[in-house]
Image 1 (spheres, rainbow, N blue to C red):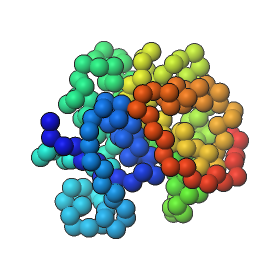
Image 2: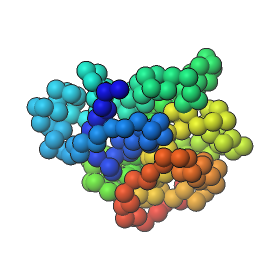
Image 3: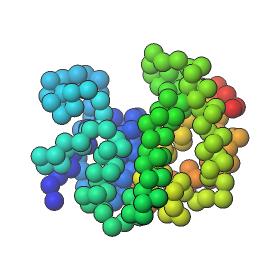
Image 4: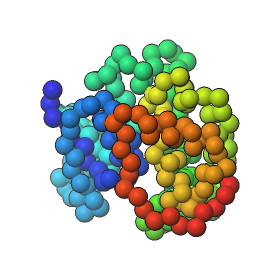
Length: 207
């Protein structure tokens, strides 16, 4: 097997979801810190012209976008496992949650964290509004379920986990969402789990 190389930063939730899968699949890999200066370099932009992380390099194959990397890793290294269901409905639902990770989660809890922790020029009121619609829906979906799609963890769970877990770093309390907190704890109990480095918690908003 070729050596896998992941470019990213430990504080990135997009990178973290890929790191979790690599660890849970027990895939050896090199990690290259790719801060803002690295991402703007000509060398990095040959890997990803958008200058974004994460980027996975597997021999001659280069994959950008965290959700695309998750799908690639499972199809390449763990094709007959629970991570990406083969059943047509379950496969579609998994893709649906990957879309939520890139949509409602990115522009809700993830955006709030970017603003509070890194001063990113996004709209905090909009982030709170998106999170305020999404988190109750997620809570309702998880009531009576162990994981998002099947009785076993899938890529849907890893794609959605990190930024939801880090919602308090964006000033959004999860205290009103017991099913979400139980789901987060189940993922955190999986072999290979590793947390992101902690950041200071700002004042919390209860949705």
